[in-house]
Picture 1: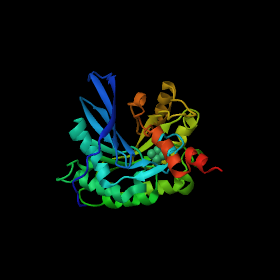
Picture 2 (picture 1 turned 180 degrees about the vertical axis):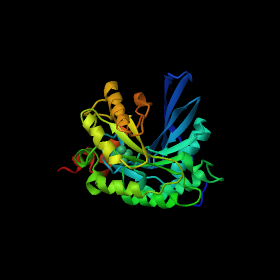
Picture 3 (picture 1 turned 90 degrees about the vertical axis):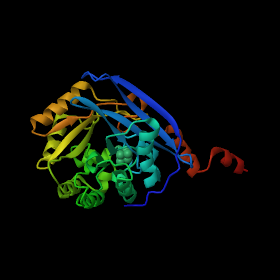
Length: 323
Ligand code: SF4
């Protein structure tokens, strides 16, 4: 297990909450987004999400593995920032620590679905998982941890190596598919130009399977892009033979998004078609949209602007050096 040095506690610089009345009678449920600031001024965003489970509400902590992201998915707020830095294991574990001891919510589950692509910072992500599951760390069972990837096959293979190790057999993998074919996927996810869907499928099929667990395939439903009934048929065909759950996520518009959120009818129609095709399908509940805390909405506009000033020549210094 990697050494776990005592860490500097970064301040929570912002916290926002969205309270919704749960329709199943659990009373008000709260989504909490909190922002930590590092000594370099950059920030990580994390979200505590309530999850309804039959008779009770549990919590999932969505952690970031990077500030910004290099993958450039066109529908994602974080992708618009570009990559600003990769986090250290300490900075990832810090998000769990702050949730538990500062915000006061000890999460049951941890998902690497916040800012960043985990396979782009994989050594560190795997180290942080060792700490989170450790008895002198977070004591979070591996079965309650999910790594979500955009579909880097080498990263998937390396996560598979960890899953093959004793104690990690039930670590979960989620893959963001988001498209029915290469043309559409390449247009919204540049990573598909490096590794197409066939390569991705091979990596998914080769991923080790233990017990009855099913891999999670995420599908952000974007109106007019990937939400047609024929698209659904193509997705189901692509997933045939893979034991997986198709998780349909109604699109949460990023800032300046060319697309809105899908209509309720189109979400229901897509899910109904997938089920009719024999595909096990779930809907991801929409939480935190009003506070830019929902899936695909993390990212700070101010910091994004700062990056471009930092990388180039500021307007002021340009004026000063102009003869
Ligand atoms: S969806 Fe994930 S991989 Fe794509 S840009 Fe956003 S954070 Fe990065």
